Image (cartoon, rainbow, N blue to C red; front, top):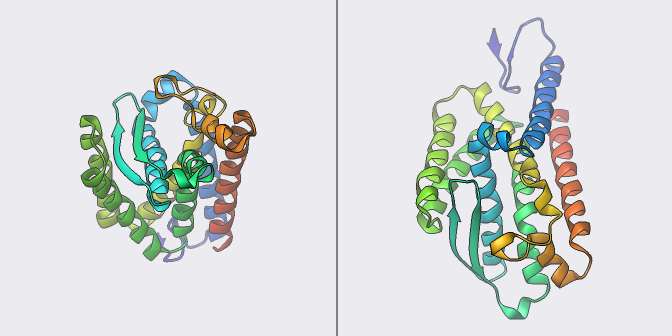
Length: 247
């Protein structure tokens, strides 16, 4: 056995790299489909619990960071043991209606964009390792600055430390696999609560993200839900296509 610097999978000397890449790509696609399906059933919440918490972190952080980017305030992030979460932020009224619509859309769309960056980072060992360190470090940093729920103060830094341990101690092939798998999970996190994309209400929290977009941009919430679901899938497919084509 030998380890290729270009590909993260261990290769047999007489085995073509393209065949190994195809197996790795097939596995990632299968994992993405399985994750989307499992998240639609109660048992999936138990099987995918760590990724459910990570998906919530991606979603709520995207709301808060978009508010910051638009000149608003990101006040706090709360994540709870049932996998739910809420980001508290403030926006300038001068940015209405576009600003609030962008912040609402950032929750479902921020994770696929971040996931795409992680998948593309897998094209080289150096960028894969760096991306794992950045993601793990940002989980820890977000805990210090924004996380204010007891469960979040435990779970988020634990996830960050696990990812940093992979970046610092794991073999190259595992780092490559980890960054791709985390990227895929971020992309499909839009489907974590697929019914939420097509719901007007978010229960006690008020309007759903898509309903908030409807309120500002007029087209119905189900249109925005469908658009974001399709966009997330396109981002995932194109990211994998580019990452594996470069090999």
